Structure formats: structure tokens, C-alpha cells
Amino acid sequence: MGTVTRGTTNPNRLRRMDRWIAATHGAALRRAEDPVAVDLGYGAAPWTAVELLARLRTVAPRVRVVGVEIEPARVAAAKPYEREGLVFRHGGFEIPVAQRPVLVRAANVLRQYDEGEVAEVWARICARLAPGGLLVEGTCDEVGRRHVWVALGAEGARTVTFATRLGSLGQPSDLAERLPKALIHRNVPGEPVHAFLRDFDRAWAAAAPYASYGARQRWMRAVRDLTADWPVTDGPARWRQGEVTVAWEALAPRGR
Image (tube, rainbow, N blue to C red; front, top):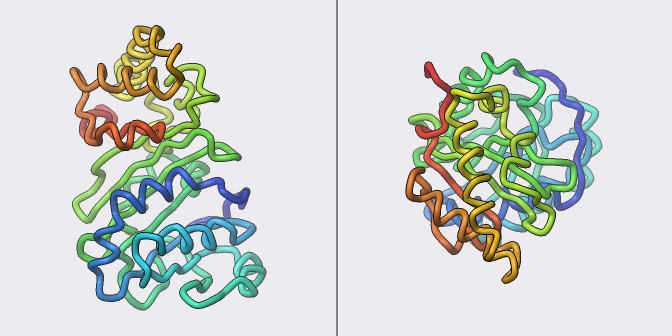
């Protein structure tokens, strides 16, 4: 189920998303009796699936990764990279694995779909999750310096995370071009995500004196100021990584 994507991929492109998953979902992967993670739509090369296995095994040594692609030729090309704990399968949003996965990561998959299709895809994938499982769906630039993703459980969307290489950031609203499909067309006046990015830019500007201590300190000060008006769900340990996570309800499109 689904359509073929462009397949663009690069080594280390999804490192920010992977680090966040390992930090926030590692305990669930360790607790699972048979922890399976799915790299959905890994693209024309298998690098992201190979890297996901390596990163998750630092926190959950028993985890297995299944790379799933809807284009058969890409699956065939990835087969030589199979190893203990890593296999590749032909499929799409139906998630063709025998057991329910504890994690599904779908990066840069839904950008080509219509906004109205997103909710159905989210629901279909979340219905396949194991109890306590997580879907992480988002978008990043070609080299992984800017990334925004939504984390979802069986009940639906939970949080939105903004992550960036701080040294390359002009202002937080630069991340707007990497908003996932559910939000990218809502970055207009009157929508919550637009208000959030506006306030983030203002906090960033107010934190300019901290730039003398480095972009990290400026980012952390700006995020701390944001917490007065927005439900930021993480803390300084993640902010130091160039991240901030906000409750989905605060950024969800109007009328949903």
C-alpha cells in the first residue's frame, strides 16, 4: 500500500531522528520480548536501515530491523546488506512483518502525498504497532541538518520534535521548510504551528546576547523562554542536542 518515492537518501541523514528514538524509546525496545523496528520507505539505498540497527543496538541489543520498500528493485539491491538482525522486505503501509513492530520509522515518505491522506496512513500504521509501540514520521533535508517529526502511538499523535544543527541555523523558523506533511501547509497566520514558529523566532532574537557563549546556549535560552507559553515536553538534556519537543495538541491544525 502506497506509492514509490523518489528514494533520495544519504548516509547519516537520519542521525538526529535515530538519536532521539534511542533516547526516548530505548526502554520500550529493551522491555519488548521480541523487539522489531521497521524502517519504512528506506529509499534507493539501504544506509538508513543499516544505521538504524547500529544505533538502536546501543540501547537495545536484541532489537531487529526490517527495511520495507514498495519498489521491488530497491529491495533486491538491499539484499546483499542483510545480516544478523537486519532484513529487507517488499511492502508499504501494511507493514509486512510477522509480528507487530515496537517501532516504525517513516522519514521523508509522506511528503509526496496529499495532506488529506496523512491521517489515514498514520492510523493504518499505528494499528500495526505492538502495545507501547511508536511511529515516528517526519522530514529532513538532504544531509540531515534540519529535521521535524511527529511521534505517534496507538491513540494518535503525541508530540512534534524540531531538531537542527545549531551552527547552521539562521533562526528557528528556518525549520518550517522541513515540517511534515500534516503541518507544512498550515504554516500560515491563524494556525498554531505558525504562531509557534513566530514565538520561537522572537525568543531566539531575545536570546541574542547568549550567542557570545555559542549557538547551543542561545538555543537553550530561547527554548526555556518558550516553555512559558508552549507545552514543551522535554528538558535541557535534549535541548543541548539542538532539539525541542512540543505536545501535538498545541500545534495540531485547526479544525482537527
